[in-house]
Amino acid sequence: MKKQILTQSDATTSSSVLATVLTNVLAAGALLLALLPGAANAAPHDSARQWQLQRLFHPTPAQLTRERQGSVFIYDGLSARDIDRALKQAFDRVDAMMFVNVIREKQDQGDSGDDGGTIATSDDDDC
Image (cartoon, rainbow, N blue to C red; front, side):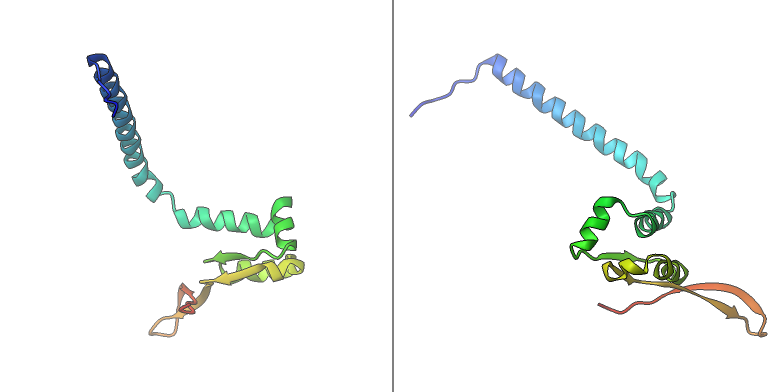
């Protein structure tokens, strides 16, 4: 059985490496925490919607190739208006599209029967 003897310099080097790693992890965590509040206020739904619309109406050649190979992309939370547009402009790719949580807009008729504005609702199929 072979024993390993650590010298004072080995212990100092190990401590130094551990301290460096710990410092980097703490710095990364602090940076993440600093960025989260700003990211939360950046309307993540809008950026996700924009990304999906970009993919839906302007797919890359690689995305088109995957669709031709049978891949289906699930679009989540797009408006019924966006989907109608997609069905008109990209009908040839409809077999590679699936839409869930569709946002439908309906007119709100107030108690007095006047037009109270538009309400967005979402279809939920519980699957």
